[in-house]
Image (cartoon, rainbow, N blue to C red; front, top):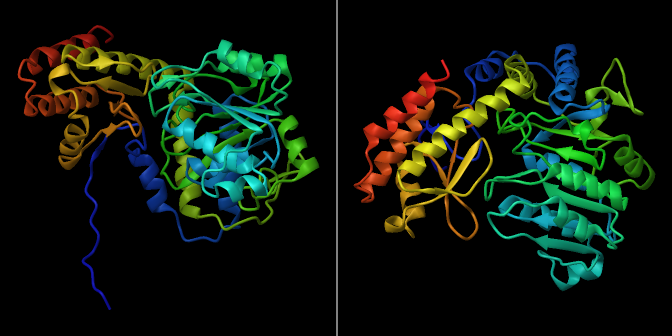
Length: 410
């Protein structure tokens, strides 16, 4: 047989759009979990308590609020599974990940003839994808105009688009959905646990899906949080959906949700890892102990410090998210974005380029809410810029300004 040496993966500074560096408490909860089957009373209790904490995190009273086993894409698959072939959908694309959402929606809404014409990239006439320029936010006016007279059953939008670092207008989206009688579906992968919002404040949105690895800061392969209103659940209950593993109603049985009610016992749906339950439970405890509003304010402050620092290096920031800075390099380094990112990653500094054109650099601060962390990121990025020939950067002066910003809030 082919023999390989043991796999050793070193620590890196995860300074991209996600996943973020995992809290030691989450890792400890994973490592300290005993070996137990997925129906063990303590495993079920962990899921029941996580369900309650998720409702607080989402800011909702929705009974159908729980986690889909897997990554964020698993949660989004569950969210979009209510869409059936032939349904009219209006979806908004302003970056890489909203673009993949749109691709998913086209697949869900396609008829056999649509697949026959293009099996991997069907383009059903019943799905209207509104293309919004890279680096531009989706506005309520855009949504209102697109839904007017569309006859759509569903509308879909990403709340925070990490592909371009833009926050889209969730209030305007909800208002337009209510106005035009459309059911809204929202990808909240990059906003949950970072922005302080209550999903119940947006009645036009009937379903939300997030992920474990960004604002929640659990391990990536744990649970993708979802929350569904009664209106959404009623559609699935009436029409069904072509999904079993990530079925919005059937999956909830294992989280002790049956017929729209919390129940005392769990029903089997799929095998759940006790390690995943323990670490996810701890991640939720950490974020709620921290406080939603405090975390949102801290992200906003730390992002402002990082933005000020990279701007002083001659970069132009085009994003408005508080967990991610998306920037253009100075003119002298334009075109060398991927090269700079590769060098940083080789040195254990995990920043990212954008995954679609135009190529920009993305620096994230997930779980990096401290003076030492921001100073480390700024220092590493300044060194990388100087190594590429940006010799006019005064690293010491920039770090002194970072320190001053933190001293002013102490």
